[in-house]
Length: 353
Image (cartoon, rainbow, N blue to C red; front, side, top):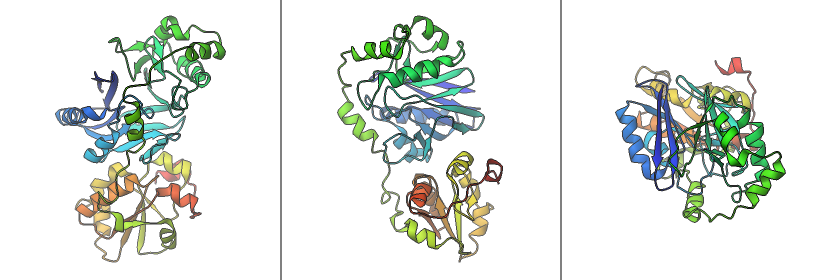
């Protein structure tokens, strides 16, 4: 496995780059916008393809790099379902998995620092964002933070992991890079409490200044969505009412770009073909499935995903490949369900087909 822990010295933020093998797929956790060029350089040096960019929560001390990385690499952006971010490709929930080639992260909802905080565990390590730090814990006094929720996340989730689990936090201000669950149980002063009330008393007594970039970072991090006009897709974005009219039309092929777990959880548009976004490029190149289907000039492709981000990116790629009879669904399956569009609920086995 390829593992890199990268530091932004201004915000003391740790960013993590993971890949299963040289030349394979990669994901990145909590990237910082000022370091995006370095991340792209490192990906090139290691011959890696970035397929997912994760933020553990809406950050207040730096501007996220996931939007810039999406624009540069067409990777999938990932955040928790509670996030108020305007546009993100994939929203995850407690118990889900985030997967790339040879790597699977278990998703843990850990509110407290903020109400949208998540951690991600893999085998013998856990990426704790701002929930659990080395000999500390994340503050709970802004962005709907809650010390009692933080106590529950810490003691009933993170600290139930095996003691030998390596802890990789989102920040460190003293130069430490890694700890373990066992070490934090024994030596973290904020964890030497007997109850949620005692923990809340400690956190409520802290008098901390707001992060210096908070007034800039939070609004910027809530508005990472791209502009449809920037991708030149406005006129090929189909509202749900017009898309619903196309169900059952033999000349319209609905393409579902989501991952299997999303299809099982949220349902599918009847008659749609499953083609995960990360597999799109090989299918639109000469000899690919969609390239072959596009030989019929009357065939229309209608792309959809969870919220409209992946489908907009996919439209751009298909248009560049010459598959011009393509459009995408505004707002994805989320908008479709809200509009009352028909939905089927496959089992996990049928969703794989």
